[in-house]
Image 1 (spheres, rainbow, N blue to C red):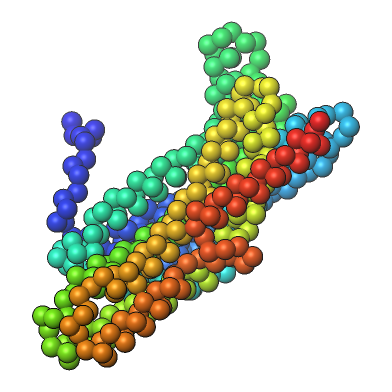
Image 2 (image 1 turned 45 degrees about the vertical axis):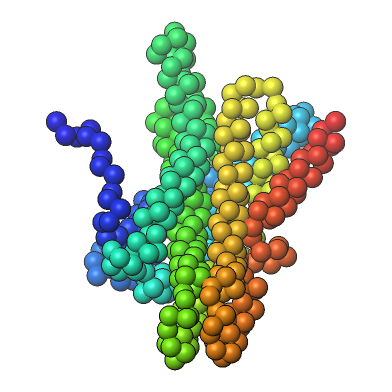
Length: 408
């Protein structure tokens, strides 16, 4: 029996493909019907089925979001506490973030596909090149981050979705409860009686579970695409810095040195252009994401201050997932800045003393250009970095402090 045999680690000298570095987000996205390369799919039936599945999934998703908003409005009375009234707000905020991200990807589908095609053209194609680019390291590191991040975010949606059913099953079949509790993981207003009839209950329950899955996947996959694109740009910037710093102009003729810098500048400019495309595609999505994340972190943290242990555990998972999501985006934004700035340091640290004045002038231009690093710049926000993470946390704490003051 070889079904459970441990998978052998991939050899460092094994050839990787561009698809190996993008397979995770693209395959995961397909589970809700989103195929970025659908226009190239020659199977029209499969293409339309996936598109229909995606549309139906988001119609179902937004119907439940409307039910959450209706629940919040209908239960906002003087007879319940602020803690109870705002329990549904983090879920609504998370849902809006998922909608914003999916809308952004829909509007930017063609630029995103073009950018991926451009990255594929730059991708090293031989084992020797991939060793110089450290492709195995970047793939391994990226996959670890994406796996942990995805598991954490999907744990949140799964815990909210399936906890009531698991709890009711254990109490009914193993603890002797006389009734099977028919509760839902999310607070939703239904325009019909969703709990009396068992068939209606399970139909509504699995509809809500699928809604949570769609929200989780669309929420995660946009960030996974951002991670895989920034990882490859960071790989190119670091390769440029490594080769530039190691280049010894004294070992070549002046003509060879000038030609080397000419090719270097072209390569550098292309990498910078791709970073601007990443910025144009993701900047507005990240802005809306950070604003919504500040509110979600605030309200999830507010729910953690409650006294119900079950609610505290569920919302703590929610709080952690939102916090990690913001941190991961800021981490990769900081990596892009650091790797692009490093090119200027590499230009200064190489052996340029014996080279011609023309060669030195070109190096000066490279250093000057590197002082304006590649970055993602959401409107009204500074370039995404660890400083941005601290700003989001500060915004969340200010909202939280305001809620606590109002609650008292």
